Image 1: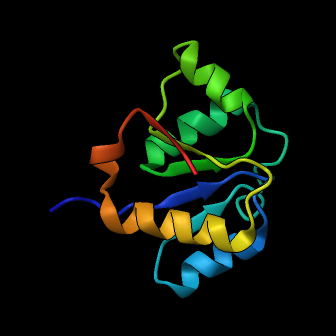
Image 2: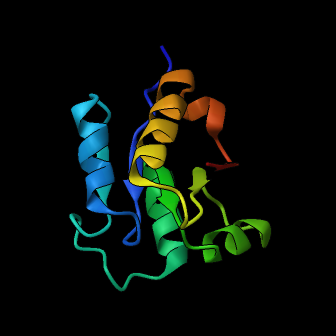
Length: 110
């Protein structure tokens, strides 16, 4: 059975996104909730990979790290101009249409 998509939201993604996902039965953790502020971006990628989570970010540094070859699970890049509703709907679509294994080492754009 394919593993459900679980999200790891970086510090720049509003906490209401996490709440919106949880209300829809999707498992999510935030960098802030996990007390990981100040941790280097490479470590966030490694943590998400180890924990089998999709990293959701506005920070294009993660895209640069991925292009440079940093190992990662999945990165979902969200442009800053996206509304909260657009972010939640986009992540719900990803969670319901994919498994973590299908997304491995991919970068998705909302």
